[in-house]
Image (cartoon, rainbow, N blue to C red; front, side, top):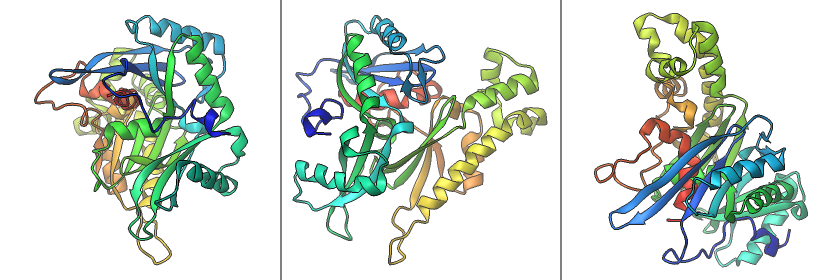
Length: 367
C-alpha cells in the first residue's frame, strides 16, 4: 500500500498542535460493546470530560470484524448523540487481525526508507502482501548492542482498516487515527519512563483475552486467546444459582478467595477459567522472560504482568496468577499518566477503569 493511503488510517508523526486541536474522543469497539472516553485540559490539569459504554447486539462485530455495516453505523450514530458535538475520534483496531513485530533500522533511515525496509520483512512475518496491507511503525529506542534504532511495526489487512474508517465516516465522525488495541493500552498503563522493564499485558475481556508484550510502553508482540470472563459468569450462574448483580458481586467481592470461608463450590465454579488463563499467561511469560540472543543473553526479561479488562476484577485473580507464574502481577492503573489521585478523583472507580484501558489510551492521544 502506498504511503499516501496508509496515512489515512494510521497515526501520523505530525499531529495537530494541542492548542489548536478540537476535543477528541477515544472509542474502543469490541464484539459486545463500544466504550468511549473524553479527556480535557483545564486550569487544574487533565480531567475526565465524559465516558460511556454502549452495548452492541450480537453479530454486528464478530472477532473484531464488522459483519453488519449498517447496524455498526447506526450504533456509532447513536453514540454520537452523547458526545455533545465532539466528532474527532481516535479508535482502536482489533488485535485478532493485527501482525505486530519489532525490527531494527539504522539511525539515519528516513521514514520512506523505513517503510520500504518493512515491506521486505513481510514475506517472513506477515501472511499478506504489502499491497493488501496498512502498516506503520513506532520508535522503541536505541538498541545498545547494535547501535541501531529499534522499531515496532503494526500491520493490518487493508479491508479491515477501510471498514472501520468507512463506518466512522458514515456516522459523521472525523477519524484522526486507528491503532492496535495494545498500543492504546500500553499508552495508558505504561509509566513512560525509558528504564521501564518489559511488561506482559493481559486484557481479560468478556469473550477473549488479549496478550501484549510492551517494550518501553510500545508493543512488540500481540496475540489473542478464546478465554473470557463470560465463562466465569456462566459457571457462577450455573454452579451457584446466582443471577444479575449477584453474579458480579460474587466475582468482585469473593471470587477466588471464597475458599477462605469454606465455600469450595464457588471456587470450583470459576477455577477452570482462571486456571486456563493462568496457563496461557505462564506460556507467554516463560517464552519472553527467558528469550536469549545468539550469545545466550536474555533480551526481554519480563518485569511484571499487568492485568486490565472488565474480567480482571475477579477478586483474588492477580494473587492467583502471581502464584502460578511466580511473577509480579498487578492490576493496571490507567490514570497514572493523566493525573494524581491526591489532586483529583475520577468519576470512574478503579474497578470500572479496567474496562476503559483501551479508550483511555486512545483519549490520551489528544492530550
